[in-house]
Image (tube, rainbow, N blue to C red):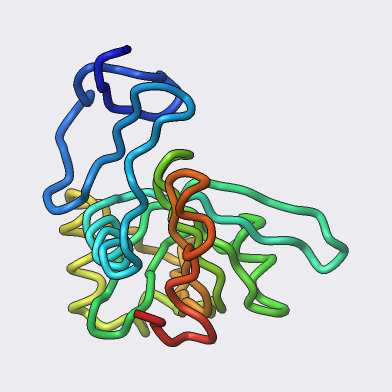
Length: 185
């Protein structure tokens, strides 16, 4: 039997995590491809999702143009507990911003393939001048001083409609944590 190790992204199975660990997130471990940790409760998954949203800095963001051309880009984000929304910045000419304008639909993924958080929601464009100062400051603090300013930048405020989280097949059945903007747990 192989010793238990932790999985970290595309690097594969490593005995220790590269870089800092996130406080409060339970980390999956695997010993073989068929021997998985028991599934987390939906309550534990929600807590893990909230910790990840508060601590992770980057997410994959998917949109589609009106004629169906997909775009997938990484963007840095801030999770605002008080509003239950994600805030991201992008250049107003980037396909992500252009694609959001007509319909507002967006999909955001946080985490790696063995610890997925999938968010589908509505996005609206917020001009930097209209973003509350506290939000702008929190965004800059989380991202170690990066504060996009000037006319070429705009913000997206994303309101989740659905949130799903899973690690392995044994968590697929109860992966829905939010539906129609309401937490199920």
